[in-house]
Image (cartoon, rainbow, N blue to C red):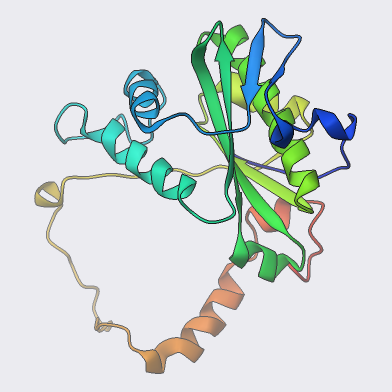
Length: 232
C-alpha cells in the first residue's frame, strides 16, 4: 500500500524535534533516538521481522532475503541527506524509520518531497504504537528540512503501519501487486502475428514518451488530492 501526506507545520515546541536528541514517548516507554540502528542490530532486527518484501516468493538460501533487505536499507542510510530514527522499548530496538528526500519526485511535483520507510516490530498494538512514534519524529524532521510532501510504502497486510499512517494524516493512494516466477518454469514466448520484437534504442525515445503520456492517466499522483492534476 502506498500512502502520502502533505507535511504540516510542527505541532510541538522547537526543542521537541526528533533531530535534536533522544526523547521519550508517552506511549509504553518508547524512546526515539535520532539515529539509525547499528549494522549488526539492523541485520538482527530484519532477520526476525515477519514482513520482508518478496518473502512469499523467495527461493534463495535461508537468510538471504533478510541480508538483501539489510543491504538495501544500509544503502539508503548511506545516501547523503537521509535522516533516520530508532525506537527503543526498554533498551531493545522496536523499530526504525528513514526520511529520504526524493529528487525526481520533487522536480516533477514542483515542491520538496520525501519518502518515509517505516519498520515496526511486535503484535498489532505494540507495532502501531512504535509506528506512530516514529512517524511523529519523521514529521518533525520533515518540517525542519522544509519538505512539503511525504510518501510511504508498506506491506498491504501490515495493519499496524497502515492504521498509524492513516491516524497521522496519510492517505492511501495506491496498491502494488508483485508477480514472481522462476524463469525456467515460464512457457516459451509466443509472438503474435504481425508484431515484430526488437531491442529499444535512443531513437525510440520520442515515441515512447508519447506512449507514456497517454498511458499514465491514473496512479498515486493522480489519486493524491494535494497534487495538482497538471503536475500528476
